[in-house]
Image (cartoon, rainbow, N blue to C red; front, side, top):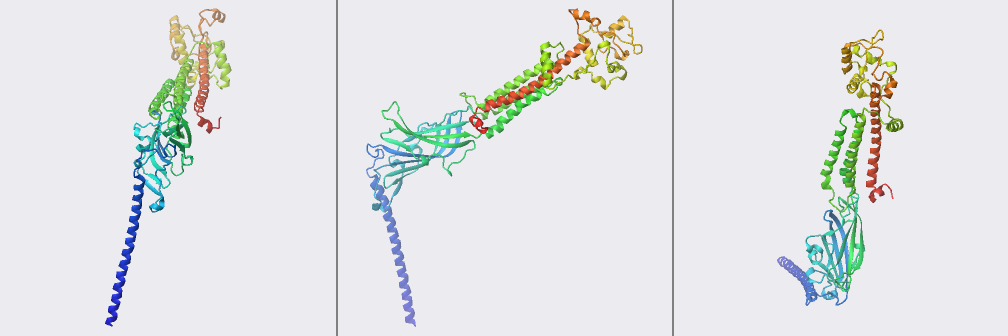
Length: 532
């Protein structure tokens, strides 16, 4: 039994030793393979770069074709003042260098290596229209810091992210409905087309789904790529170049909501100045307040507008036209007020034009409660005014309301002291008799001493000259009668109401037409409304 146990222990020990030996051999083989692979990579690098000079142009005297691809990542910003576009890209350059080839079978099937760009020859493809103050940021070794992938057949691929600031002529004529075309020109600085020929990988250039990040201010409509050859006066041979064009449009919703709508609202408030009654005395002050509001609004929003002296953009034109229209409204308000408070006889042509022709069109009627002075008859409510005191009916004759009132009569008598009014006896319809002093006092008093005299019936005469109509017509210094003064004043006030309605209609028409003419200049606005 003891012999059997010793035999089992010996077998277990031999098995453990065998297992350790196998594990050691496997590890040794793995390390050997790794060292062999490392040695192959090192041998490959040593063989490739032994005696290699990165300044030597590949291919001898043949022209090297460089394939360029540019994928736009995002539009960072556009500086209208400095005409500069800042954008982020993924750049790819591919070319073949016959000096960097090997047989993968001799180097452990290694088909691709990655090296620093300073170790090999690289094309000096730069951004010609660079706007960055740092001139080292135009491309090539100064711009791209990533490694270059070299294949066994000599193909080189250099992929790197880059942030470019390029010159872009910004046309803000149609701001905020403007479209821009920003060109980025890539070409070699040192080699002409006989040494280096640049081509574009069109399928790998431009907008790529999943890579491009939309901008909050600009929409990318498309990317165009064009290759061309340009000959400069400095050199005998032309240079090949690839021009990448970004077609972008400004997102206008922000500017419409924050700049256009408030301006239009302030401009529309001027319409309400012609709705206010002229006697309120607030028309001119309202117009001036609107003008000040527009000026202050323009000053506050000037920081959001692109500064440029080359073109006057749409919204700036709209601001200027709106301010000009408000100024015209102030002038029109002054004309209306002048009409409203005029008390002279209206010219015949003006009466025909405003009262007979335009008043029916604009549905304006005279508010004057006319009464006839025929047979020297006064309205009964005027006659009874002294008995009832302050009668509401009395108010209807106030000139300010378009009728006749003792306030109006007193104004008339103050302006024309030649008008006289003889009191009449209520019962007998005969003139009351006063002493000459009392008659003079009655004539000179603005209120006609209503509280002390009973007026009922007929007026003996309104005026010494009006007593004889023939004499009044032939008199060179004819004074207007009370009825004429009231009628003239009511004609002017009716004319002012006609002007109010004409100006409101014209203001709305001018405001709408001017806004349409201004903003329909932008092709994008015409496209929205299907206007060619």
